[in-house]
Length: 448
Image 1 (cartoon, rainbow, N blue to C red):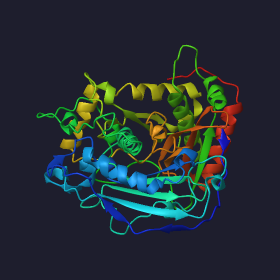
Image 2 (cartoon, rainbow, N blue to C red):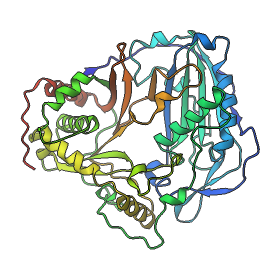
Image 3 (cartoon, rainbow, N blue to C red):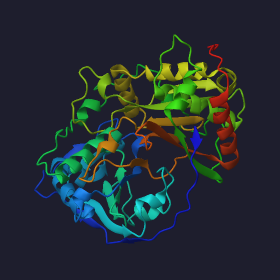
Image 4 (cartoon, one colour):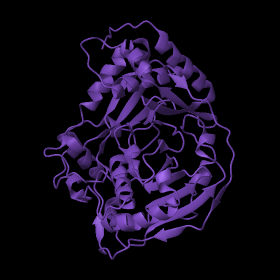
């Protein structure tokens, strides 16, 4: 594990006026309800992400902003709901009004080169608010653009593609599918290789709702304060950690020989345990790890190829602080694996029924740590003609969420970048816990 250094780069961005890009052909004017997975409280916000692209001699003389804007207008013919606006109906039901008003687009220039950002690209990024400008009045949930894109040209010939999108419209897999379509059209395709599928009714509550799971992830008390320590937010610091294959191999020393696990499993168990130890909570307090799971293939048959709505489950692992921190890593690992196995077709149907009957609540946040794996979302494969991005991921760190961001070193070896946000004093302890974990001699028994 390597703690990546903070950056102090300063540069100037010159932006043109934001404009609305509309579908280049007429599209249906209709209202399309979102699914009951889409419009839960935990999706009602905007997600911001950055994609860094190098210069490419074969594209010399081509303007990335112009190429992408023209491709966007064509892609919106197929993904026309993105050009609409959200309305809210009875029981907080969200509906896309397909008005064709368009998505916001900004082109800009920065007096900086890609190399100035350093050998490793990772959040938080300097001058992020300039690379993705929040157009005043544009970031509401309802009656606002569902997508904002800013393309910033760099001195070196590279560019930064930044986006802000309404999470109720799509998850990471869905957004990467849309961006892939823009890239394919930018490179000359007439239609996307994967036709988009709406069909949000596939993830809607049953006519006779039946909650068949406990769903601890939604079990917080909505009528008063939740039990558990609330992490102070007045002195938070954001750090990114680089995990090489050697680090993952080091963690696997702690895994019993009869316990198979993925990189996601072992990394999540490690981060959850080290973070909890660093927070120095009451041993009797309960803490939780929420894994964001793509449920597309949990259905029989699977959701249609091309479905770009939210298809996420939020299974939760729970433990007392004492058990989590005093037991070996294998204890946390088994809890992570058990949580992930909860996500089945019936689990997702039960989730939808719960969301509708209980007012579309948010997941439990107090005492929780959320992890999301972006290594399989295919964002890095998006190619607008300049090749794949050298970095893709969130612009900054989030308080309760860590994203697993795919990266490659100069040798072409796969690595994972994990941004973490904690109070300054806690971050020092967290770093020490991680370092100790990497050099400790493993004890692989766990009393569960």
